[in-house]
Amino acid sequence: MLRANFRFLTKHFGCIKGLTQDRLAHVIGVSFQTINLIVNGKRAVTADVALRLARYFKMTPQFWLNMQNAVDLHQAAAALESRTG
Figure 1: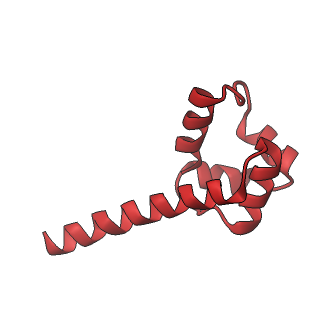
Figure 2: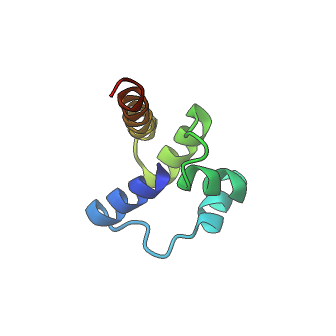
């Protein structure tokens, strides 16, 4: 999830070149594991993380939560399609 957001931000804002997961975790005050799990699609962006990311990137928390909702909807649609064919 966050990986897609990183690509989006790099493409449209160029604001994260050279930003590592470890550095991002440190500057927003969460663990490396939290960021790593989000980036690798194994954990969702929570309201708390959305607030922290929004503050750091000077964006809204809704941006991050909307991106998470888009991922969730995509995954749910794919699961439904595989069950119903």
